[in-house]
Image (cartoon, rainbow, N blue to C red; front, side, top):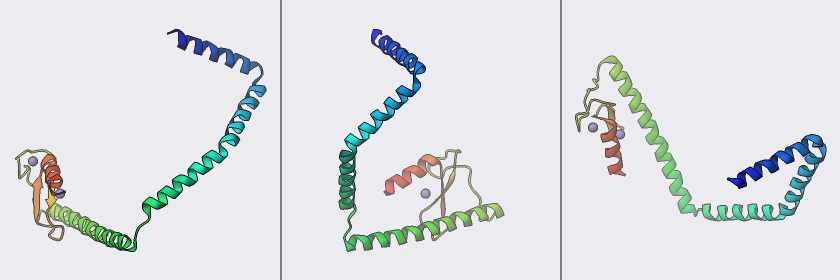
Length: 143
Ligand SMILES: [Zn+2]
Ligand SMILES: [Zn+2]
């Protein structure tokens, strides 16, 4: 491809010239950058401001929305806490042999990657043992 070849040559020439007089070239490129920034300063600043404004507008929430969010976050935290606790309890029960993890998925019978699914995290020992695919399927169906 001749175009690339030319470009390479040009760049080579540029590097050679630069090697002879690096200071001049560095100075020039610095000046170019400075000039570019100065020229575009207002533009850039204005753009930033506009983006920020839009973002604020988009994220402005009514008091009701805020309250909803608060409730959601609270529930989320509580649920997560339950989840962590449940998983912890199951782990202990498995270790102590109080709970036995089956080798097969309860749904499809596959003997790979079987792990517990909880319909209700407040009932840690009510577990459905599923393979990865079936587990994913169950969650997708619920959402
Ligand atoms: Zn699950
Ligand atoms: Zn399965």
